[in-house]
Image (cartoon, rainbow, N blue to C red; front, side, top):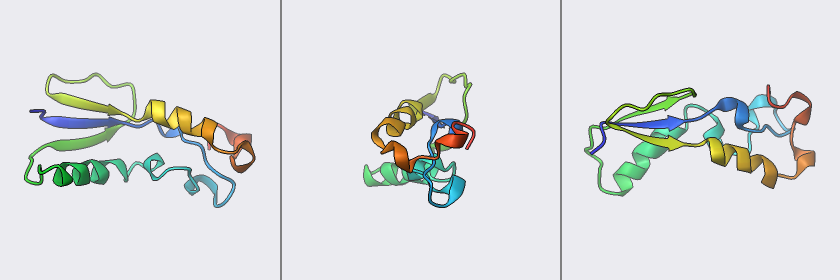
Length: 97
């Protein structure tokens, strides 16, 4: 059993669209407040609703501890950029936006 679930999420990797500025993202996972509740929901759906597991969303660099389970969203965030129509992305400020 893991003592903590660590979600690695580098905000600079998530692309923004041209709709409403930095909050127009291609995935809700781009927002730091989304990943932890989603991990909790997955635990509940799998029958671990009473689990005393801490869920932290961290930016890299990160050194995992002995009891940590690491969920790394960075590969997903990088791939998302290449499946979105380029004309929809805010490229003028990439990756700072």
